[in-house]
Length: 331
Image (cartoon, rainbow, N blue to C red; front, side):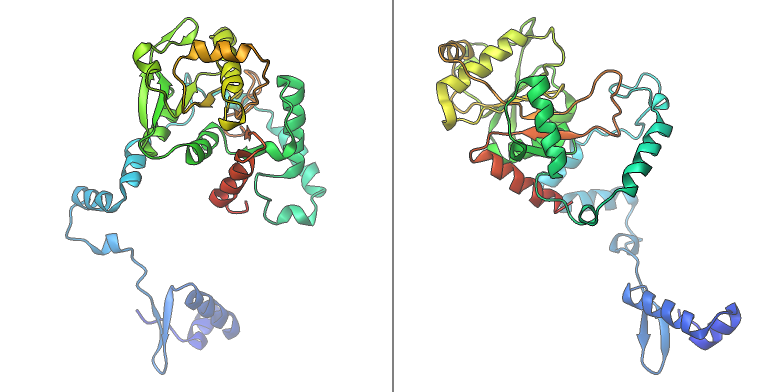
C-alpha cells in the first residue's frame, strides 16, 4: 500500500511537513516502509513467515515448527512445565503478595534513584554489581560461617540459573546425576533439558539413601534438598560434604548449596558416601555454599528473590564469572 506524500499527509493532519518526513524516515529505518525513487513510500511486508503459510493448519504448523528446533530446544520446550497461573490462594511456593509493603518499597526505591551514579547506568561487570557481591559475602560470613571473598560471589536470577551455570561447567551431555525421589520439578526439568541422565535415589529420614548398586557407579553430580528444612538430614549432609572435600581436596570441586532450596555436589569418583564421609572427618574441612539465595518465611517475595552462587576461588570461580557474563551479556 502506498502512503500519502509528506506534504499531503501533513496538510490532512494539520502538522508540519518536516514532522511527517521525520516519521517516514523512522519507519524506513525500522523496516516498516520502503521507498521507491520516483514512485513514493510503501508499507513493507513485515508478516512473519509462519503467518504467510495460511494453508497449513495451526496444529500441523506448530508441529513443523517444533521439528525445526534442535534436540536440546525440543527437550527444553517439552520439559518447561510452567503454568500460566502464577499466583493466587494456595499456590505452592507463592506467598501472599498483597501483604508486600509497596509504599515502603517505593519510598526506598525513589530515594535510591535520586542518588544513582552515572556508572550504574552502564553494563554491570561479570558476576554482578560489586558492592552487592561484597554485601552477600559479608552475609555468608555472618549467617553461614562461610569464609568467601566477594570475587567468589556470582549474582544470578535464582536457583535455576545457579544450577544451570553449575551443570554447564561441571557436566557433559549424558552424565549421570543423582536426584531425590521425588525431585523438585524445576531442577529436574532443567537437568533433563540439558541432556543429563537422572538417577532417582530413595529418601529416608536422614535424606538421600543410595543403595549398593548406586554407590558402585559414581555420578557426576548430586542434587539434594536444602538446609533450610533444618530437620532434614542435616547431619548426613554435613558429613557427606566434609568427607568428600577431605578425600579429594582441590582436585574435586565440591559445591554445596546453602540456598534454602538445594545443594549441589560434583562427585565424579564417589563410591560410598559413608566411606568418603569417614575420610573427611579425619581432617576438618569447611565447605563453601554454591547456590544460596535468601528467602525467609515472612520476607519471601517470589518476584523479588535474588540468587547468588558462592564458588571456590581456584579455576571454578573465574569460570563461573565468565560464563555468567557470556549468558547475561553485561547486564
